[in-house]
Image 1: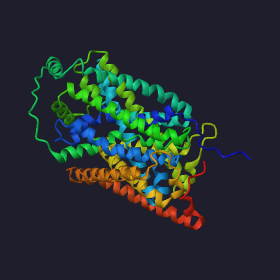
Image 2 (image 1 turned 45 degrees about the vertical axis):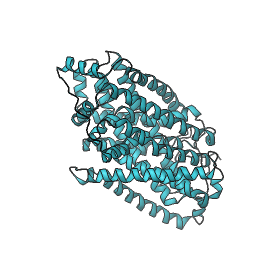
Image 3 (image 1 turned 60 degrees about the vertical axis):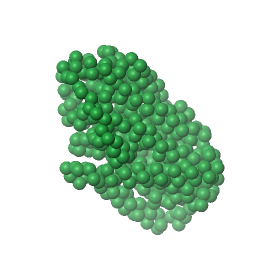
Image 4 (image 1 turned 135 degrees about the horizontal axis):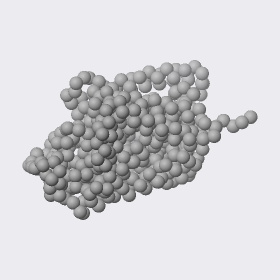
Length: 493
């Protein structure tokens, strides 16, 4: 009898790190810190401080993930951690929230990558091509082609996946460094002079507005999305080599390294482009860091940073598709979703059905972004989803010792219980505060229709998830006498 195909451990430390970095660097660095002025128009010049404040709950969440990943190195990440260390239903809610948010944002990222291609066309004076990329059906078609190309890449296996990701990550950081170093050669006066020369416009920088705590905290809650992505590392638990060491190490390297890169990159752009100009442009059109810097950078250099930003954005997609597909795979292994989602390609050792399902939902994210006319709806849904997910991970860290002592004893990172409790409670306080702020901002935001409130969309989806869980749980009660014990142990590899 032949052995049933399964996920195979073949991802080294650098591939695991690249998975997290690729999921983090993209829209988070090139779009969100500048388009934030559309979502929070009263933020003023406080983007960098809001960015730094947003890193605090992300660090707590990352430490919780690192600790739990050392004890439960399997595909499924947040689902596995919370279902074994807290409660099966809350584990499903945490991961379904993550799955839905990431699936939608894959579509958002694919959709907003097209303006980067438009900017490249402009830089080469291909104005007709740039105009074509503004046409709705062309933008949607290209976005969908990106998604399904990377679904195919993931299906081809980890080797193909790693061969793309590793050189792309190196190239992204090299090209992004151009932005960081540009602040040593250009300043605001260079930008104002270039704007007058190119557009005949004299831009007057307005006085700095009064600081508003409500705007600052709302912006920090949105900018928190920039640090989301390291959780993709946890999804490689069944395919990473030496996972008890490599998963926590990769999570910490991704958060600290990418966080520093974010801050330097964003600080450089705002040291050249006045915040007031960025805020003005964000209300008019979709803007990007390369598009803003193209005013001052010489021809050729501006194209390089646009290319780097485009690669960073597109490179989000394969890592995120891997992440959401492994979540579905883990659900199916536990019987929460149809068993067909556990189907593994016998040659490539990839979850082919789960990857196709991830591609379908991500395609809906593209169509939703086009329908809404503002990709921030998708980002707001993701922020809500991930704040709930990370909050439940922090709670799991607090409860796992009592709920599942056997798995708690498997922890190999930060074993000191008082330190674990500090991380867990720190995460609970900061993440619950961010969640309340984010929900208040969304519910009080005037929109054209109720379904443009991300909170309502998220609640409807969570209601559907609850019904799915209840149905599948009742089926397990009937068919599997020992179904509760299944949620005390790690899945068989």
